Image (cartoon, rainbow, N blue to C red; front, side, top):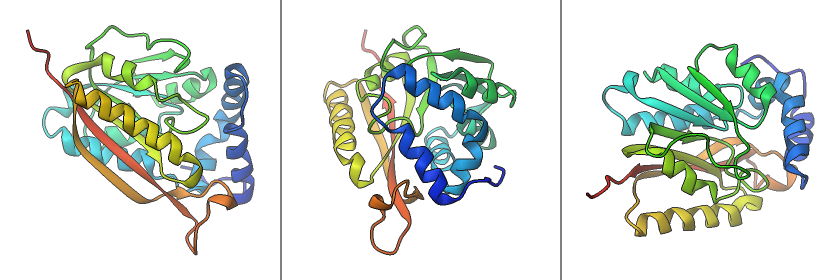
Length: 234
């Protein structure tokens, strides 16, 4: 990623705007405006989630990665698909609410299909049991995509397929994280999916506000969840 023209404090101010309480339409307008500088800004934060999530997913998908159809949810400018490509995946469909973000992703020529979708506002535009892999990185957090979307993510995953999700563990996101883990546990208790691994990451990214800085570290932590959708019983 290219070096940003903005300082860490300036990037923090931009990120704070992204998490403000506003209408879905206003949030989309923000991401459309941010698309051009998004990758430069997250490089300032040392945003490691795409690389780390891709590595965890690859560890659960040992063989035939090149033939697995991946749905990259909240794909943004395509950072996750770039990392998955390095891990041997080749087939990508992307979804995002922001048309400008998707335009940036399209320039990378990684996706066979890109569709606009307002997560949490409308169902995923896919038939059930369709994708070998579904991954969502960065969007499951307070003020972003609601926890309820997990049900739809699992719906479009093939039986036996993999679902990879991430969230942050910073102070302001702890309630959201607890709600997300409650939803995942409920799905598992119903026999719909099974947890393969949960990995806690100490250096997820630099804190996006001074209030989140704890001790001497500028970093917040995060977590990656990898689940397998259970085979249906006929």
